Length: 456
Image (cartoon, rainbow, N blue to C red):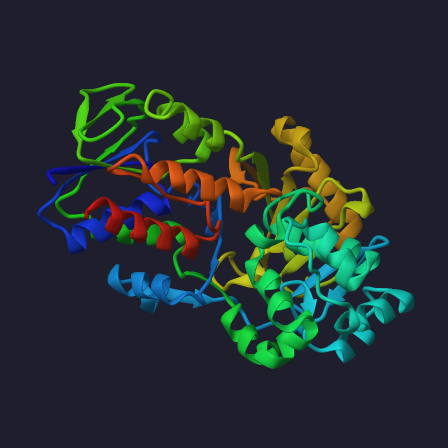
């Protein structure tokens, strides 16, 4: 093997490039990235001593292979856990923020007693939730939506108040269409193994062990520092930013990679670490049936609206990491992170930094609003919810169009069919958030596995 070409310089492509540089230095590797920077949706910026994350602000540090990767690129000692705050998350109900007990794991209660004492759910809703352990396991092998799963096991109210905003919100998805087995395989496996999620959580002692494992982690200097650290370990790899791939020619190695600008490249192996729709576009001549399947993976657009404010602009102190908003509340905001509460060093003293999320599968049009309108709506809703008064010091809007893949019903079957077609094309490897996990650790694992497959 002479050359591997990686298309896509997000975290997946970077993990693949680093793995090849470390394990197969004799192979020539070229990485193409359409943007003028690496990192994909990871983007860290500073404004008046505030630290802003345009994309993900953290990750869950519970997958060992990803933890090994942090050690390899030298950032393990710079990782910062979220502050240990009781009552980390609240959910809006009837215009008021209600505490989501810390005993909830993956939207499910590991301690029913704490739920019975909470104000988030009505008494009938609590009684229905407490009966979860007596609900028989599902025998139907067909795919089930997150919404149907939650209503079946915990009741309608628990779905509307917890399942939809908490778990559906992770993917900015329509929970009625989101595949449980693909998006939340742990919940799917728990029911299959134990017949009850409550019993499964108790058996695995996730109430305490899971609480530590589910801590959010970031880099002290922002997620962009992780990208910089990986870049510094890509010695010997040719990196071309600002170079989009136009198409791939050939149905077997050597492939001919045609960029939008610049000279064509020949590749003995290809790692395509782009969104599925971008992969479909560049592979249209290589395998039309594969492109058809890739285009069936839906994507949604989202935006993050930052407001920097004085502490005195709030009528009352902010509690926890932030809040989630069920669709039944009729708000534009889906969720809001109290950034200056979640991680230290994100805002100057006597200042607060808020990050509101809008858009997604259930409100796709809002992403097209002008920035001033978005900021005004977010400010007005935060005035109602947290008592924010006056104008912010400044605001910033980050838009991500068609950036978040949706693991809708039938996703596992689609990915299985994609894998089968890819196996029939020697030298081609697909990787990234579109297939078997959207989190940063999932993307790192996907990129490392792609590097191993491409270098065989």
